[in-house]
Length: 383
Image 1 (tube, one colour):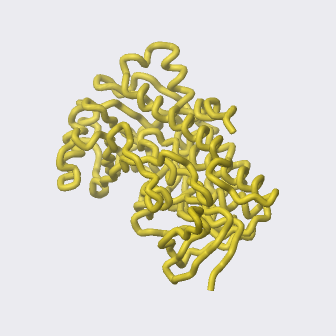
Image 2: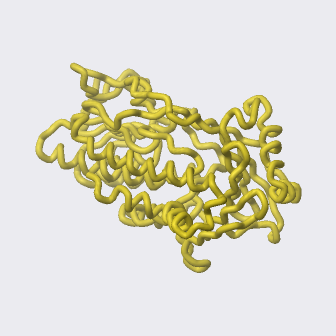
Image 3: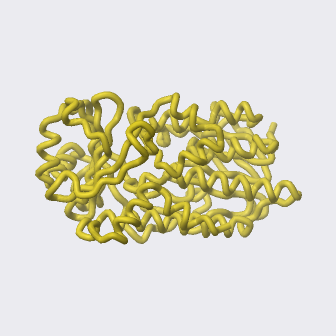
C-alpha cells in the first residue's frame, strides 16, 4: 500500500512546518512527516532568539500570537562587551513597553505549525520516521517510512535539521571552509541585581565568544562558543573546558562566581558540513537542511521562514501549470540563500573585532545585522 501527494515535507524544523502550512493553505495535497529522530529533538530548557525581522513573517502566517502565548519572554537588547568592560556598545530591540525581540522555547517553536497545518488540510504523520528516499531515473519521487510504506509526490521538501536528511543520503555534503564550532552552556539562578535586561556577547581569545541571555524568572543562560582546539577534551570534560574559557574574562569570572548553577554544562557541536546545492530533481532543501548556520548568528529563524516561503511560492507556481519541479527551478532560491548566509558570516566577522566597533560605519552595519534587517535588504532583489 502506498500514498500519493502533491508535496511531501520531511523534518521537524520550523522551515518544514511553514512550507507544509503554506502549501496546504494554497490547496495542495500535502503530507508532512516530522521525522522525529531522537537526535533531532530539542534539549529540555533550550531556547531560540526571535529577532525583529522574523516577527513580520510570523504575523503574516498567523503564527505570531500563538507563539507568544506558548512559551516566550521579551529580549530588550544586546550589549557588546570586550575583555575589559561588561558593556562597550548597546543595541536595543524596540522599547521596554513594546520589545521587538523575544526568546522562545525550542519545543514550542518546533510544535508551532503542527495544528495549523492540520487545520489547513495537511496530513501530518507523527507516528513514523523516514528511512530512505525513493528514486526513479535519477529523480527523487518520494520517501519510504519505517512501517514499510512508500509515499510518492511531485516534490519532496527536506526540512530536517543539522545533519540534513537529503544532503546526507544524496551525498550533497562538502567540508566547510571554516572549522566547525563547539557550544558549551549552563543555566544559573541569579538575584534581581544580577539579572541582565539585555543579552550580552563578548569575544574570547582564540576566536570564540562568551554570551549570556536572560530567561524566564530569575534564570540566565551563560555559554561559550569556540573552535574545538580552543578547549581541548570538551567532550570528556565539558565543565572544566567551560570554566577555563569563562575565566579568560575577569569580569565574567566574577559574575559567574556570584550565581547558582542550576544544572550541568551542555555541549553541542556545530556540524562542519554544508550542501553545495539547494535542490536536485524532485527534492529541495529548506532551513537547516540546506545550511546549519554558525550558532553565534541566531539568524536561523529568519532563514527558516524565508526559505520555506520562497520554496513554497516556487512550488505552487510550478504545480499550478502542471510542471514537476526540477533542480534548475530553484537556482534563484539558491542564490538568495547564499547571499543571506554571506550576511550571517559578515556578522560573525564584525563581532570578532571589538577594536573596530567605535567606527560609525561598523556600528551601523552591526546594528542592521543584529536586528536582522541587512539579511532582508541583501536578498530582497533575488528570485
